[in-house]
Image 1 (spheres, rainbow, N blue to C red):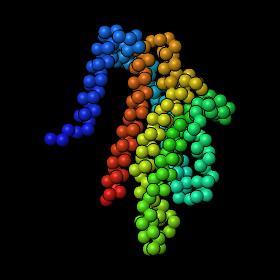
Image 2: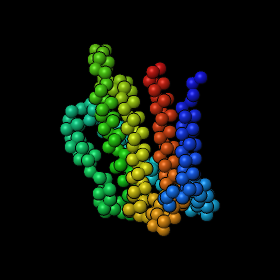
Image 3: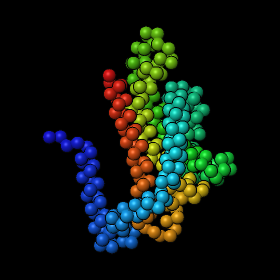
Image 4: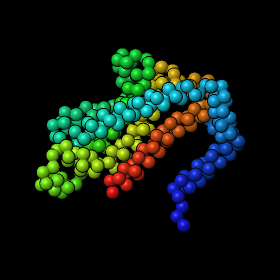
Length: 248
C-alpha cells in the first residue's frame, strides 16, 4: 500500500518534536527549551493579544509584496525569455541585484517610502521578484521549438504564442520560482520589521530576542516558519491544479 506524502511528513515532524522535547528536558542547551514551554509561550502571547495584530500586519505585507513580485516577475521574465532586446536591457540590472545583499538597500527604501508599511512591502518585493524573473525567463527560453514552429506555420500571432504555448510550457519553472519567492518574501518582511521599524512579528522577535526570553522567541520563530509554509502549500496546490489543466 502506498503511503501518502503527508504521512511521511507527519512522522518526521513528530519525531523531530520528540527529540526537541527530550533535548529541552535534559537542558542540553539554554537555546533549546522544551517544546511544551514554547507552546505555553505561544498560548500566553495569544491570550494577551500580543501576537494577533502583529501577525496580521506581517501577513498583509508578505502577501502584497509577494503578489506584486509574482506579477512583475512573470512579466519581466517572459519579456527577457522571449525578446533579446528586453534581455539586453534588464539582464545587467537583474544580475547586479541578485548578487547584492538586499538589506543594503534598506536606507534607500527608508528615504523613498519612509519607515511605514510601504518599506516592508518594498523589501519583501525586492527579496522575491528576482527569483521569479530568473525562473520565468528560463522556462520561456526552454520552450519546445518544434511547437513554436508548428504554431507559426498555422499562422499563430505573437500573443497566441505567448498565451497558448510559451507561458503554459514555462509553468513548471514559474511555479518553482514562486515557491522559492515565498520564503524570500517572508525573510524580507521580518528583516524589514526588525531593521526599518520595530513593528509586526519581526518587532516582537527583536523585543524578545533582546530580553533573551527564549521560549517566546522560539514561539515567534515557529510562527514565522508557518508564515512561509502555508503560502508554499498554496503554491504547491496551484501547481498541481495547473499541471492537471496543462495535461488536459
